[in-house]
Image 1: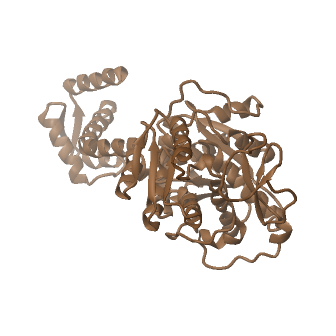
Image 2 (image 1 turned 135 degrees about the horizontal axis):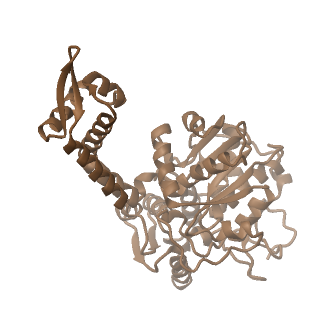
Image 3 (image 1 turned 180 degrees about the vertical axis):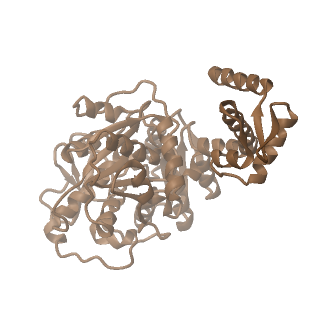
Length: 474
């Protein structure tokens, strides 16, 4: 144990303040079992100058010492000004920190580059981690690049897109447990048994250090926003972001701090529930459930830190439904061209709610963290595939139904119908639909003032009633 050390980085207990050597990275205190994290002598760091290109490793002087650097060009991700989304919500300044632009399409590449580099420094031949998706994919890729053997413990509930990445990078995969909490326990016991390098984010404090660089980048790209919105699983990411901002304040780089918003799913909200009850520990969830697997965590090991971050920042916590997440996912894609996974889209769902409630004001500057790509989320991909298969049939049925509804109110001619349908197709396509409806006896045509008018028949009216009854049953 170190006491009064002048080292630039030491592991410090968040409970009893005991300090330990920075390596090997361990996450609990030998004295009191409290969580450990890296702390710095900011007097030593005050003169540090950042150099190099705008990537993760630009911040090397502000990280625990690393000699080997295993990199794939991670970090330096765009801060996208979401003008159309902001307009839709009624805000003036919304930005999306787009972590999907990392090498394996998620924020976890930051963790992987730092932990795999550290594993090489310490001469490990194998790494192990528990993951329900993004970290496993990242670690598998970086291990492949460095020649390390990568062992990944996954729960039964894992996105197939992320599992596919692990497989193609030749990771050794073991399934254990229903959700990632059980996988974490297995990874912890395996590392002790085999002496493999422990790369589970919740069990390695380097993950916090890696993820804090997101805050560093946002400050360089934009400055300090009024609000920073983060989805919460284990609680480590929101703590990381807060740590990054506070360190920049300690260095004198910034004067103000953002308010943090932590977002969870309605069916799995142990941290949000604790925040709403003013409790210091996450509230136990007996049967957690959400399709956003990236934030499906029953027992968030960093939950206390997440709660502290929101409280210190005078922020808020929000739980959103899966349907709100999926709707937000499509909205981001439609308005901003970013395909985010459900867990990331939860930040937009929360933003909309807080804006409508007046908690976030029109002129507030907001950053939403987009942690991973929707290409990895199985449920969404399956839904989109199904939508694609039924799109043509669905469009035809909906267009014919719209024509019948228009004609049920009053007779109309072709050009008039085309305008009422919103000019979303060619006039020739509209006439094709009219011909089809005429052949089925649902509409009929007649001449008036030199124009061909269409009117609904009794059979067409019965068809509309049948459609209405069917919709009531669905």
